[in-house]
Length: 153
Image (cartoon, rainbow, N blue to C red; front, top):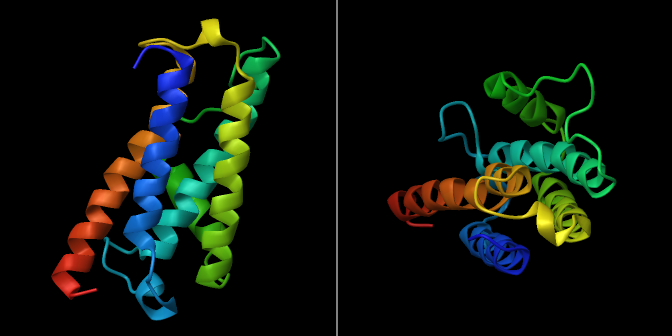
């Protein structure tokens, strides 16, 4: 995965795979806690949070700026994960899913706007798309599929 086209294609493919992993789950299944203290809804909420943050990073990159604004530190991922999941705690799971789907589209559009030469193995845009996009989808999609199988869902 070294060029823009293949990277964006991978992002779309893994998005579709993740959607399939959660398709058909009802409200009870979406809110059942099984992943530590998280449910599928919480997993999606934290992915949504990361994608909102990284959409702005991609937009900055498209403008030729540094991806991370001055004074922001993303290194404590556990803290950010908890913050993102907590932000959607009282929201209906279907609303969280719909918000995530819209956020993904905005995220992908922001990635599309980054210049072709910014893409490549080990480059920042590829790392952002893997960490908050296709890699995240793979990781959590596999976990959800395994959980669903164990629950007969």
